[in-house]
Image (cartoon, rainbow, N blue to C red; front, side, top):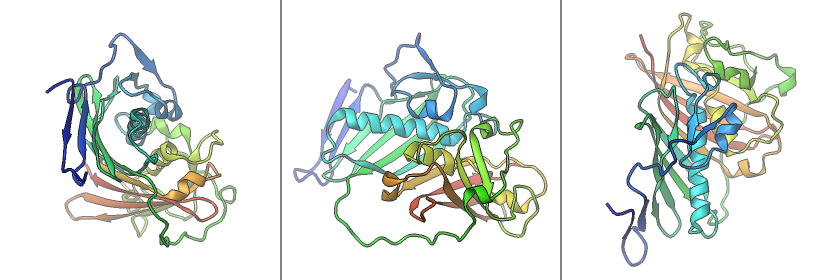
Length: 299
């Protein structure tokens, strides 16, 4: 494969083009240069191709928190798209899907994306590499706003405001990343409390961060609650994410608060697979985005 390969589709652009900068899965980095990050916010601004040292404080269960890894990747993809100058008008991320293959406990790098460009829809595929091996594969779909239409979204739950709810802290000895998150549940359900339904709901934000919810923060926070399936359990078990899909909504661009209301509900099969749906709203009721997670209960 050449260092830069372009494959042109049909003349009308219906198939679009494929662009590969560098060799497939390459990073084009200086291995002697390693960036240090100390917070989820640092990860959101990591440059494409940079080698990033992963501190233990950003771990979830057993490795780098999945939402942080995905937010880092989406930031790099968006920067790559903007730098290309080929999205006119500018595109927004409409959907991003991550497949998690192994835990990340050391340095991490976002590989150079492979782009497929059509008239309206652009898509990018890349990998998150650790020690030279692919740990996460990511596919993103980007497109501009095309035309206005009547919006329909999920109904926002009626709940008390954030400061009318007590804080629930994730134990840092189990989830080191939890120290960066403020969680205020809006219902009685708690993880591993033996409840009647696999549902969790809470106001959630980045701790000590008054920046309104943006795409990176949305992705991190959508993955910040304990799995909602744990609400019916009493014994601690790991339920790692196998796949995570995030779909932001246009209201995210006008968010004015660092808080979002997060509702999570799971369907659990009798052989341990969990299909989780999550929705997020701003305090004014605007639907910010949704996510789905495929999880597996480990014995």
